[in-house]
Image: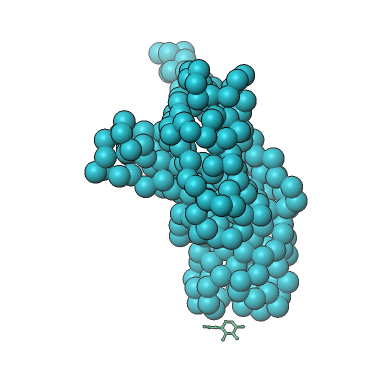
Length: 253
Ligand SMILES: *[C@@H]1O[C@H](CO)[C@@H](O)[C@H](O)[C@H]1NC(C)=O
C-alpha cells in the first residue's frame, strides 16, 4: 500500500515537472493568425494595454504586438516574446517562412459584432497577433490581410538591465517594469525602501505594479519574479531622491 502511495506521488511529481519543463523550454509551435495595423512609424498603439507608453517605442519598436485574450492572459503575458512565422499560404507567406520575434505590448480587444473567422480575429478562443506593418512584411506580403502563422514562446533577448519607471503620488506608488529578459513575463514584484522590509506589490494593469506604502525619500530595491519561477533582486535601483516619472535600470536575468 505504501509502495502504491509512493508510486502515485511519484507520478504526480513527474507530471508537475513536465508542466514546468514545458513552461521553461517553450518549444512547440502552435497555430494562430496574424494581421497588421497601419502606422507610419511601425509601432503599434502608443499607450497600449500593457502600460508601456512611449517606452516601448525604444525598447520593442516595430516588433511590438497586440495579443488576443487567449494569449494576453489578462496582461500577464505583457513583455513575453514570441517567435512567429507565416505558414501554409503559398501566395502570402514569404519564401522559406522566415520568422520574427515579437514582444507582447498590447491587448487586441475582441469584437463580438464580427465572427471569429471574419474580422473578429481577437475573439475568444482565437489566438491572434496584431503586428506592425513593418514586422508583418518581414514574414508575409503586405496585401495579405490575415495570415496563418505558427508561434512559440522564446527567450527574450534584452540589452541592458530591467527598467523600472515610477509613477503615482506619495500615497499611491506604482512602478512599470520593462525590458525584462528570460521569459519576459513578470508575475510577482516586491519593493523595499531603506526603512521598510520587502513589500509585495499588486498588479495594477499590464506590467504596472502598485503599493500604497509611502516610499518617498528612500532608495528603492526591487525583487522581480518571472513566470518560469526565476527571481532577481536589484538593490538600490533608485537613489533616495527619486522622483515620480523617472526610469531606473536594475539587473538583468
Ligand atoms: C511620505 O513620506 C515623505 C518623506 O518621509 C513625507 O515628506 C510625506 O509627507 C509623506 N507623504 C504622506 C502622504 O504621508
